[in-house]
Length: 327
Length: 251
Image 1 (cartoon, rainbow over the protein chains, first blue to last red):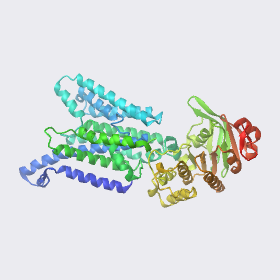
Image 2 (spheres, rainbow over the protein chains, first blue to last red):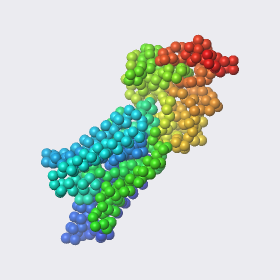
Image 3 (cartoon, rainbow over the protein chains, first blue to last red):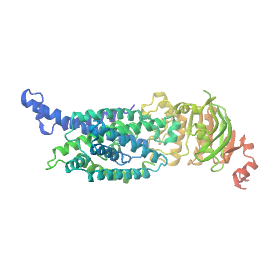
């Protein structure tokens, strides 16, 4: 149901970026020695397959999930500035994860942390939707999101203030800054089912999002099942965001920037926007993560920090020019 | 299913305010009905009620003998097309994609991926509304009147046997107003039932075979223009009187 050309182009970019990201540290030598027998080959296999590949796939998965969630929320709320980060969904989700870590809920179940992260994402999206649905003012929605973000940030700061020892504090801070370093296959296996479920739900909403371009009543008049579309996007984007936050902490803005770049290439169609936005956002995070990995800083830069350094100015630029879009 | 619309003893409104009271209207296939009334009389609400966008609080709305509240949104949209007064699009989509949305209940795809037959319907609707020259431009670059014609084309492209149009002449220049009225009359001649809300009483009198006058949420007159828009109704409901030049003057 989606346009083929932008998808193929973006898929090619994504594949290239994944391949490029696998190589850089020692040039292509690692990849060649993958097939060598013995200790040399074994080292290369561990390096590439057990350390680098999961990290790259985590970066791609997190980026794609956030790009998809951003594109879907923008379609639902008819607002180009909607994004899990801006709306406070990521913040609330991170708060859920921090609570799970702080109270050591993982001792009860390994699903406690991602579960709480997703539940908080879901609750926040529903709250935002009910607040935003009563008025079409996009400004109000963004302001509510900013408020929720700040509240989540303050509660996380409170937990850090009360952190029992400096080690758990630095753990929390590191995780919050957003990173995919040292992610394992287990982390990916954890997030993948949520990502896939979110992907399916959001893609099912694509035709409904197309009808919603004309507003909710008009969409209903066109024959769209508006409440189904709403439910699909809310649950889907919450799964995508919650799982991403559980894997990588808070990584902002990629969900705004990617759909904004893709939009002209899909004739501004909110349904066709979904998949290419996911592919572009994944590609961008893979490249950004490769950059932080190979840049010669004494301390590795955090992916979340890099994403914000690029994404925040882009957000300001889009917001300043957004006059003709939205309501 | 025939396009016969029956509104039976219906009332409707918003949370704390009843807009329509005890409405009884039947519209036959091929009928061309103008809905007039002062601001706030309930014209838009009545069209939304008929379109199934707003549920009836009391009474029933039937389409071809079937209760619209029991139909799915898609089923309803296959049998009637509703043009809202507000014609905004959230994104800078092209006119053709907006018109293609008229096919949503059948296909739900952007213009280029519509099946041949559906795309021809879309093209035909665009041509009939005189929108061919700007249909491929993004809607946010169009004037109010051009947007109005794109959205009218969307309702025509649906192929629905009942059109519910809320002020389709808004923002149109005089020539295009006449063109649209002629187009709708021709459409009614093909058997499509058309109900449109209008402000221009002279236009309603000249073009409609039947005029329904709403006042404060009630039907106060229903019939041929000459009887429905009689001097008493004009004075009581609109506070105007027919003037010598064919227009209206304050009563």
